[in-house]
Every structure is written in structure tokens, then in C-alpha cells.
Length: 297
Image 1 (cartoon, one colour):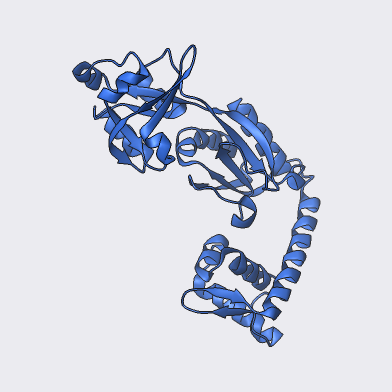
Image 2 (tube, helix red, strand yellow):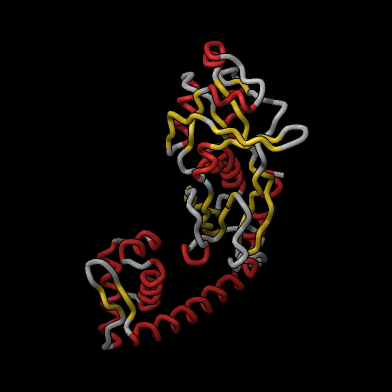
């Protein structure tokens, strides 16, 4: 017989994610098992909870009521478990974390490798994504985001160091095409575009000098949706790129790329760690937040 509590969690996940497949991904089970759990609940309750078609699903009136009750029950159980284990001296358990792709790849993973060595009873499930998400509905414990946080989110925000971009090019590119001395010179250069950026930033690069802001319309003949691929293109001398300072640290140190326009800077963007303030006293939350902020500040 399937466990009713797991069935309730599965039902809530299916409602929140909008599909059995998405719920299966969140819960690390197969879509078939999700269907079995919900079918078992409906059999026990002798009523249909979800109306399903090939394109969408919706709650029945009974399902809507049951969902609200399940959500309250599961929240109470989770709170009781956190309160019981939250005072443990050694952090343990799993944290589900979401972060921007480039930051995660070139900065966050190094921190996580050190953190997990210190705390062998901790596990991290890291999802890298540049999409704007709601951590409450997506099932993440914490989210690192670039830009001002949405004020409608009921999550606390812990500031991290600003996300800094710098401009670089390969020595062979500069030898062939010359060094830009002013941002406006980039109009005559091949500039590499990162397509997930807002459309404006793909074609308009902002620079701040001693007196004012300059926005340059750049020629992005090559735009790629993966920043790692753009870095490879720059290393091969295909053009100028702007990118995350940490991600460019090693190529610059090795002389594979050269920083340009050093008398100007690209406006920084704020970055925050978003988390549920009601869980901040849990040992695993508190330790992770403190160490993350100390590492990056």
C-alpha cells in the first residue's frame, strides 16, 4: 500500500508544478509513480481530485479543498521537523539551490566544494538557470539572483557583492584589429553577444567614464546562448566580449585574454541570496548563509 503522506506530497507537487512530469522531476520519481499516488488517493477518498486532458490539468472542487488541507498539513509537519532538528550543532540534510549559470559555474561551485568538504552530512542540489523564478513555488530553499529582487516575493534578501562585467579580447584579435581606446571605438569591432541578456544589452553596451555614461551600439555578428561558448569564441580571436569578472579571471592571468577600456567600467548589478526568513534559525540554513556571505564578501 502506498504511503498516504507521500501521496499528499505528490498531489501538492502536481498541483504546484502543473503536470505529473514536472512533479516527478521535483520529487525524483517517475511520472507513472506520480499517477499511481494520485490514483490511490482518489480511490481512498472515493472522489476525483484532478481533471486531466492531454494538454492541461485542473482541480475539481473536491480537489481544490483537499489541496488546501494537504498544503496546511504538510507545512505543519515540515515546521515540526525543522523545529526538532533545527537546533542540531552539526548541519545536515539537503538544500535545494538555484543560481545564475555563469555565476554558478565560475564562482559558486568552488565555494560549494569547500563547504561540502567541511560538512559531510550536508547535500546540495544545485540548479543553474538564468530564468526569473519564484523560489516558493519552484521548491527551492534558496535562490541567488542578479538584479533587484521582486518586492512581491515573501523571501528575505541577503546582499552579495555586485556582479561585475569587464571587457576583454584575445591578443591576436587586438593585434589584427587594434586596441579600442574609447567605448565608441567598439562600433568598428566585432563584438560577441550573449543572447540570454535583455535585448538592449546584447546590442547596447554601457560604459561609465569619469564624467558620464556612454552606451555603445555594438556589432554582434555572433550571438550565442551559452557564455562558455562565447568565451571559447573570444579565446579563438573572434571578437571582443564583456563577461563576468570571475569567469574571466584565469584567461586574463594566463594572458589568453587582455582587458580593454580599463579607464571605463560597465555598471555593476546588485546580487542577492533569497531565502525563507522563517527558516533562518535552522542550523543548515544559518551555516550556509553565513559561510556563503563570508566567502564572497
